[in-house]
Structure formats: C-alpha cells, structure tokens
Picture 1: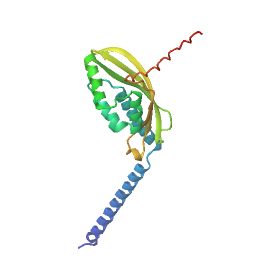
Picture 2: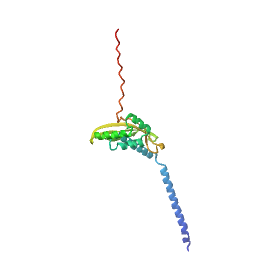
Picture 3: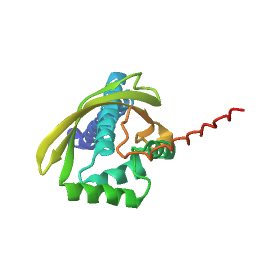
Picture 4: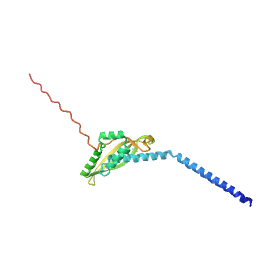
Length: 203
C-alpha cells in the first residue's frame, strides 16, 4: 500500500473535527444573538401586547350585544380584571353583580331589539411600558343599534391601569379602571322626610 492511502483516514478525521468545530461556533453565535435581544424590540413587543389587551378590555366592558355579552363578561371576570376592580365596578353599576344581571342585560336587549358595537380609536400609554404597572388612555365610541340600524354614537375615554410581570404569569391584568359611565342605573337615594312646621299658638 502507498503512504498516501494510509494517511487518508487521518485527513478525514481532521476535516470532520473542523466541521464540528465550525458548527459548535455557529450554535454559540446563535445563542448569543438570542440572549442579547434588542431592548427596543422588547419594548415594542411589550407595548403591542398591552395595547391589544387594553383594546380587548374596552370592547368587553362596553359590550351589550345579546349574542356576545356573556362571553365578554366571562373574559372580564375570569381573566382580565382583578377582584378589587370587579368589586369597584359592580358598586359603580358598571358591571352586573350576578349571573341574573347578565341574563337581564340579554333579555332586555332582545325584547327591545337593541345591540351595540364598540370601536377603539386610540390606545396611548401614560407612562413607561417597561414598568410592571402602566396606565393607558383608551378612547373610542359605542354605537347603539335598534333593529340593526345605528341609533346613536357615544364617545368614551377611559383609563386602564395594567400590571404585567412574573406575578401575573406573563399576561396583563387590570388593577384599576376609571372613566366609565354606569351601564345600569343605581337605586335612587331616599330623600329625607320634610320636617313638619309646628305653628305656635298665640296667647
């Protein structure tokens, strides 16, 4: 056998080692790029997530469509609002307090043949989105429809304060919400009884 033939296995091993080395370096570079994500890109991603969340909350809170209102309330009560916010909005009359309250909304809408559509026109952060708690100003309009025809447009501007960190499981939650007009009429306050005037007798 020739000397060249005997050297071929060593050459193959060397070439294979070089290929594995290059592949290992490429993997390290990819890991480095993934771990060193652009902070601006992360900021935009976080803002987009919060903006989308606020849009959904606004649509759910104003929803009075008999077909979708139950689903909207489920999202609000189970996913989007904290317990403290739910209690606050129920006291204000902006949210139904029981399942019967939701049924009442559906029944009244069906009897009156009314529905509505919520349009969100702007979602603006009022603070740095990198923080755990970020307030947003959400504006838009609610279009009430009777028998399928637009009846009136009512603009809204609400403030939604979101919390997003490890405690929320990487998904936003509403920790405060202001600017709502109550959807249900609160019970009228009782007027104090008028005091009877006592006439003095003339002596």
